[in-house]
Image (cartoon, rainbow, N blue to C red; front, side):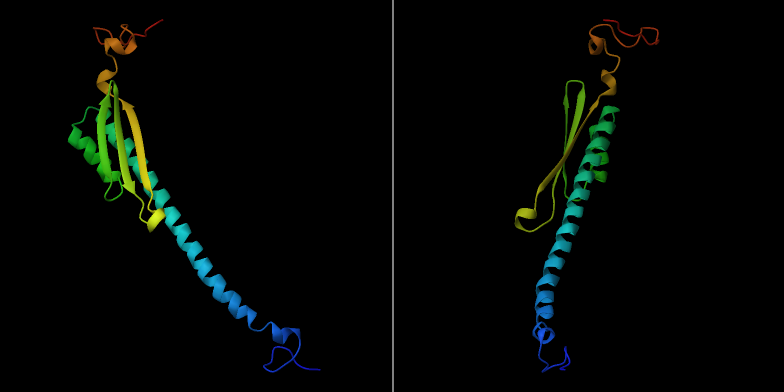
Length: 147
């Protein structure tokens, strides 16, 4: 009986000897590419979360009536490197948008952004904020507006 797995042997095992090498030659690059795609996806998700966190930090700072430069600095400190930060006010709301690009080749270089809004503290308690009823009395006591 011929021994299988030995060079020059005959039988089914001898014919399958080269397929393992060919399968490994195809599978290893595919696995490496898959691992790189997973790493890129995690990095892009992390950058997206940083954009949202930075927008929230900037909106909170601006809503506390901190100077615009300080609010922008708060947003930039939490934002990914190279991110663009925008701050503007719409009525009683302060809005902050943080934009950046996720690193990647060709179509993988996607645009990421985070946006947050906060009610400005100087708007809280204003007479027009509650339909003329106001949130605070002249003597500093709190009042509740009843419709």
